[in-house]
Image (cartoon, rainbow, N blue to C red; front, side, top):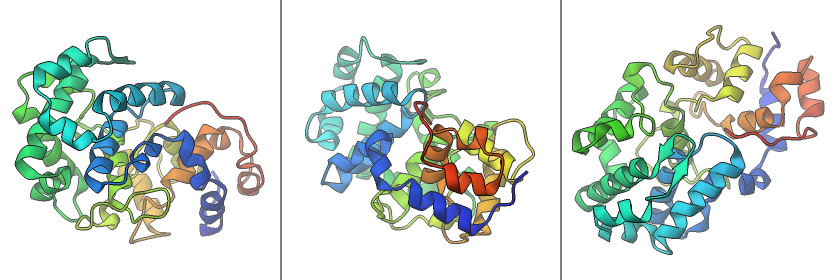
Length: 275
């Protein structure tokens, strides 16, 4: 186990900065000027942010191409049967076109009624309780869905133990301030409440630095790692997620033999994995 320090975290943040954004799924919402377009594209990109990065980019781009230049307007005005027709042949690993069509249909309903995903989230937001806040948000989709089974993989529930990596990733993107990587779209959700988007890279990092002893990548592990990072940045515990994840993609958490090796070797490895 290595000793974690702010020096290590800050060095990683400097090494893995905005130049890595072009290879990250968060690149897609940055392509739009309108906040409402950024929000919906961020949500859809986050839902598909699992697996190989090339596959993620290919799948997100397929959705973006269907939505056109005004994604929010397209989602609001498109009829459900049109989504199913347009996404008939779509597949991203275990996510099939029917699941994405259902998600787009429900996002359209929510936007028509609430105006934004942020407005819906705020209705169930409980400060200092992200598990409950996320559960209330996701459950709206299930309650509205005529085929809730199609949503189980896209929108897992933290109450069932899931780490909810992709929903936490979406929240990091839209809640944290605009720093050139994250978007700073939502102003009324506290960055202090965010939970680390837990993937294999973040889990390895957490075990390497003794932030968790858990072997299962569940909600409790995500909270434990977040709690450890909160000691370094209480108001913004997921500040270092982007750097931690990209260091993991490039192999840092598998090969480092010392904390100093992390600082000396980060950024020099060949990557290719995904979040």
